[in-house]
Length: 398
Image 1 (cartoon, rainbow, N blue to C red):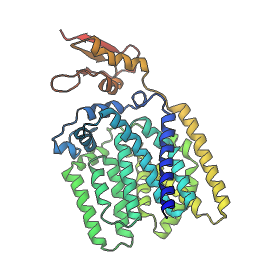
Image 2 (cartoon, helix red, strand yellow):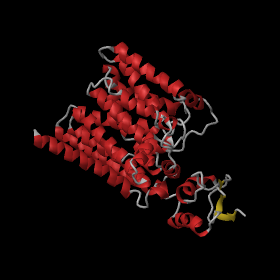
Image 3 (cartoon, rainbow, N blue to C red):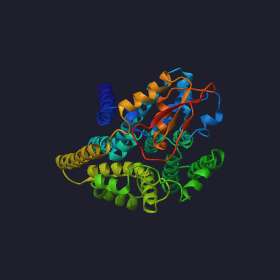
Image 4 (cartoon, helix red, strand yellow):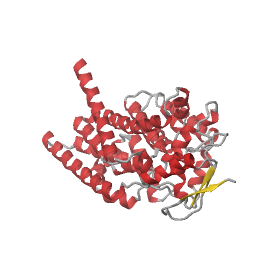
């Protein structure tokens, strides 16, 4: 028994390390060069108030987070801790997904975690440094695991963390839990439904979630920069026919309701092009990976043929991942440009930066380093123009 537990733990660590390795290899220059959101999060973690309940509840800064408060309370190095947490979210998400799929056999579990590692939706989330989306995804998977283990009421803890962390994931969590409590044969169903409704009301009115829904109805709000649906289908088409088998069986048997809820709502976002629908691809992809692994595990064929189908599916995932990475994972800023920004304030005391493009804002926030007595970065003036070389112009304040 002890050897079995040790082997399972070692396997989980190796699989988590595999996911991290894949991401790091495909991003050799580091976070600062790729992710547009990196600058906003690095700025937020370095300017986190330690005594604000509103900040802890996610009501002050779109890029701030309660974990940043704990990092600073513990006096941990801010940027390294930000990096480590971001990578850890993907590693632990893969581990939890493995634990969920292990119920259906080791072939399903290993297939699922490898598909997760080679997922272009996950890669794009990593590239863009979608820190909160990665954190929210981990919490969502923990909810699914707790439901699978029938640890009722415990899932309300990660749900509360989700609603103060990432509103899009909160919608997916509600879409997963509400139909589960309504349709699944759960004891004390009324208590669970009432608890979930209470959490949703807190989200809507206590944490300003209703404004988020108003933004979803506003056609002028940006759809959310991410993969396009066409690009996702181009690189992940092979998941759909396999996943469709288990989706049909799950609807027929009223099983895997949380996963069905998440998948149906995320697909609905894309079909009707609801605001931020491009980033909702991340959740649809997670559902497709789950149901694809489930289909392979449930095929009524010999184990060796299941393994062959799993290998072929993984081979398709790897091939598409390599093509996608070669064509789409490119640095948005060069090392010389980053060095130029970092050295600016050191060489030009009492100066500020005029940027010709709003696209430069995150890297200016991340790398300028200059601060006013209030603790804010030096003024950054921006105008909407295409990115150009030589865009950093120092102007004296005198």
